[in-house]
Image 1 (cartoon, rainbow, N blue to C red):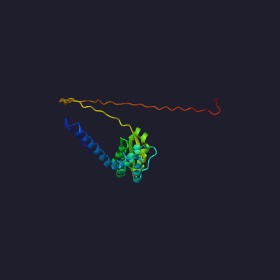
Image 2: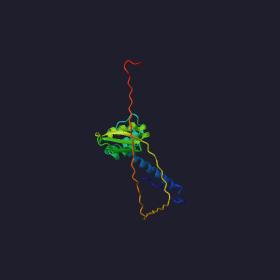
Image 3: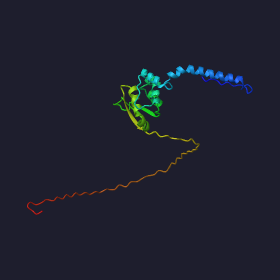
Image 4: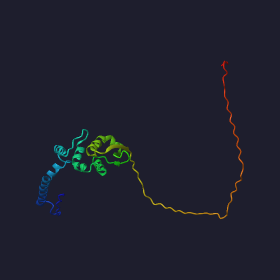
Length: 208
């Protein structure tokens, strides 16, 4: 809740009354800061990094080698949500979106024989820069009875504009009432075929 502003009429906006209003606002600002301090200390996005590491230990989250502080804070802040919906299609999409991977599509049971393979389709830039993060999240929140593989795609943005247009269509049918007869003359077709075979034999004792 935001603290309301104190407004006076123009002939009352100065002097001792205005000083009293500023003092009251300053005092209640300190009270608000004191009340919200415990909440800020327990919020992984704003708490000191030492407390965030303590919360990560309680959630079973280990720091990754290549992750920065913001990614680590996000993993701790949404640890319960990631664990609750881990392995689901919607849960994976939400998890990757919170970690900065905007475009992800998941395909399940594409092969009738290898039905346990799940294909994660993402952009080439995200897979090249954050494959270590995606692998770590799959190892931690993926289902043990599934195999995961990545597929690279190149999404294109399509822009369509609406415009007013007109169209008229008509169908006309023409028929002929006169009977038409097609005469075919029968003729004999002749065909001749000959086959010649030539062989060369070398006489015995002859010159080459």
